[in-house]
Structures are given as C-alpha cells and as structure tokens.
Length: 564
Ligand SMILES: Nc1nc2c(ncn2[C@@H]2O[C@H](COP(=O)(O)OP(=O)(O)OP(=O)(O)O)[C@@H](O)[C@H]2O)c(=O)[nH]1
Ligand SMILES: [K+]
Ligand SMILES: [Mg+2]
Image (cartoon, rainbow, N blue to C red; front, side, top):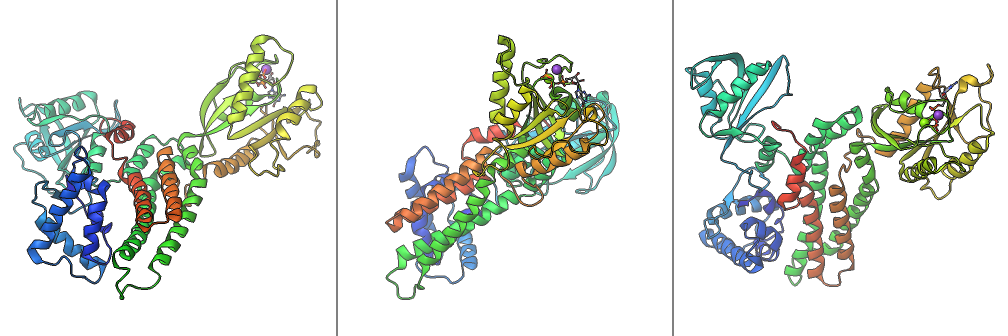
C-alpha cells in the first residue's frame, strides 16, 4: 500500500476543498492508494473520508484556500503523512515508487549478471537486505568496502574458508543502487569453476536465493528506479541487434517516452483541475473567467499531439521487431541470389532451374542498420503444377503483408510474359504515382545487369524508377543498400528524432486516451467531462506505470534473462 507523490500532483487544484472532491470520486486512484481493489468503491470512499478527517484535524487547514499549488501539495504531503495512520495505514514513500510490490521482496537474490560461458571477467550481483552480510561473509575478515568504490578482496567460501578468487567487489547501499535495495557486485575471473564456486558460496549464506529471470529489473521498477516504459527500453536494449534498434532502446531507457506521457498527463491534470474548479466554485466571484475555455484548448492541443504519435505507431513497432521486406518477381529473376547476398549467408537454394523456391523462406537481417525480416518467395507465374501453384499462392499472400516489396526482374529478360505480367500486376499498381497515397512501398531491382551489353548505362528509361544490380558481380549493391536504408528509415522512423511507440500496448493506451478526449468534447455535463479527462489520464499513467495488473508486468519482465 503506497501513497505516492504523483497522486498529489494529480490533486493540484487551487483549494484543499477540491482535494476532498477528487479523493472521493477518483475511485481508481483510491483503490490503488488503499490497496482495497476487492472491497469496492464504498470502502474507497470511506478511506477518502478517513484520510480527509486526518487531514483536517491536526491543523484545521482544510477549507482554507492556500495560494500556489506547489506549496499547497507539499503542505498536504506533510499532513497526509501524519494522517496516514488510519485503518488502511498507507505507507508514504518519498521517492516515486511504482506501487507494485517486488515479488518475493524481502529475500536477497543473487545471479550471474554477465553472459554465460568462459570469459575474462564475470559479474555476479546480489540485491536485498542481506547483501551487506553476504559481501562480508565472502570477504571475511575484512569489513564492507566504502560505498560505490571498487576494492580488491580475497573471496572465500564462508563454510570451509576455502579461497575462491581474488576479485573486485563493490558495495551499493540502497537506495542509491540499480534496484533501490542494498546491492553487492563481485567481479570475478570468468572461469566456470570460479563462477559456480562463488554462486554456491552465496547460496550458502542465510537469506540468499538465486534470482529469477528479470527479478533485478522488477525490483528496480517496484522501487521506482525505472518506469515501465524504461523497463521495456532496457529489455529492448538487451535484445537490440541493429544500430537503429539500439538507438531506439536507449532513448526509451532514458525515459523519453515516459517523459512525453508524463507531460501529457500533466496537461490533462491541469485541464481537470480547471473543470473541477468550475464545478466547485462557479458561483464564487473570484474564479477567473474562461477556465473552461482554457481546458478546452489544452485538450485540443493534446489531441493533435496524440494523433501525430499514433500515426507513427507502426514505425516504432517495426523498428523493434523488424520491417517485413518481401523479395518477389518472376521465376529465375535471381530472388534467392539477392536474399543470400543481403543476408550474407546461403539461406535459399539458387539454381538455373525456374521454380526452385517453393515455400516462403524468412530470415532476419540487418539492412543498413535497420532490422528486417527478409522473405524469399516462389517465382510468380501461371500454368504450373500443383506444388508450385501453392508456392505462388503463398508468395502472393506474403506480398499483401509486406511493409516493403523488393521486386526483382531479370534485366536481360524484360519482354518475357512472366516479366510483363509481374510489372502489370505488382510493380505498376504499387507505384509511387498512386494518388491514394497509401500505396505499398516497392523498390524495383533489375538484376543480372552483367548480361546487358557493355556501355549501356540504363537500357530501360521507360520503366518505373529502378536500380540496376548484378548479384553475380556485386555491382549496384551499394546503391541498393542506400535505397533500402531510405525506405526503411521511412518505414521504421528515425530513432534519433523522437520517442516512438515501440509496442502495441503503447498504441492501445494512446488510442484509449484519444477516445476519452473525444468523449470529453461531447460531454454535455461537466461531471461527465471531468470523468472523461480522468479516463484519458488513466490511460497515460498506465502506459508508464503498468496496466494495473500483474499479468502485464509478467509479460514485460518475461523478456529478461536471469541476472537482469
Ligand atoms: N549472370 C547472372 N546470373 C545470375 C545473377 N543472379 C542470379 N543469377 C543466376 O540466375 C539463376 C536463378 O537464380 P535464383 O537466385 O535461383 O533465381 P530465383 O528468382 O530465386 O528463381 P526461382 O526461385 O526459381 O524463382 C541462377 O543460375 C543464378 O546463378 C546475376 O546477377 N547475373
Ligand atoms: K531458380
Ligand atoms: Mg528462388
């Protein structure tokens, strides 16, 4: 049960009386504050009343207007901390914890945090209240090293006294540590025997147990060291395989997406404060004119900003999981040769026989710094046997799902029926000239340029814009990679320009927020309008603070390995 700073920032309106209204009606937040989700709204209301009674009693300040939001909520903070010894006795935390208990907190966990296998140095760490004791036990008779300073120590098994390794150790007393708890790190020599010896020695210390996957990060989240979007960024950083993915993950780990959402939530809080102030004080003479107009204009601005990000939503997800690039064309154009060239490994069988590729073959590749899922497909042609026909059907299905089509034609065979048919049915319809604007992206590649007569730079000026390539000699590959980079940057977004929505969870909450803003605009009644704003703000806070359910957290933390 945590009562946190951000609950108060959400209650910033200009009077303590408004706080009473807000607390009584904000059942969702109260449920959370009180930790009484099973007991329902009545209990929450009672809790709100208890809290307010506590607020009013010690100093009798409730009912008096206090100028300046900042000083007001600081004052309330102190009052609430005194009042918080009621039946629900919420615990006040001075830092912004996530409010979720760290699973199994209380225990001290340990794990190998660097990679498995033989290596120069391996890092083993612990987190939890017995970390200091564990560090002392393994480095006895020496005492704890100074905080956050690497010190050389002889590690020995606390049971037998047998020396294990000479290692660098670090002591991070909480809360200034990755998890917010007391942590210790052992930088040992990376041999398997040393690592297992130290892990066994730690396991023998009372109160210590091996960590589960993601448990260190989960504790960091529970102690407010990382927001949920930062946790997701960290998971992505660990899994990043390309430069663009790394850049995006780092930005998210830096909290950019979270900051953006918090900024939006603040805007909504202000708008809500205005609406509530109007409900509460509309008869007061001293209420400024135009408070509602101000709220409306804030909401309109927010709608625009959300719309821009939602339109971009697929891009961040593509960057996280890879854009779907489908290589297609008539038989024997050199599709499989191109897939092998781009992936730098023999993924597909290449042969002079048309109809070699039948199934869709997928391979993840790093294309000019962007992640892509490259699919090789069967050559498109009619009038073939049932097996190849099925291959053609699968190829066509995959083409529909492509983010980018890499259309390959044999430059020396453009007049063949298969080439003409492919141009008419795939290349031209997807062309950039399509006025609808939502055409599929396509790059046309004329392969086997080595077969063209020497000195002929572009024999097909009448074709849609295209690139010449020879998979045989590699000529034209640099130009193709450059073009791919441009296409992928457009598809995935540029991770260095702004935070992107990397998961469908983000998109879901932003859409929810936008929908609630739509309801705000339609609300005939101020109470309904205020409720819509609360719903909208709830979506933003769940984006950074979690879905309010353990399952969401489980899904996110499942991405981690043990030791992270
Ligand atoms: N001269 C020349 N031959 C090439 C080039 N690229 C591929 N080939 C040859 O063209 C033939 C067909 O290549 P594949 O890569 O199997 O073509 P594909 O489009 O995958 O063929 P299917 O899977 O049967 O549709 C092979 O004999 C390749 O060696 C090139 O740039 N120049
Ligand atoms: K072939
Ligand atoms: Mg092939």
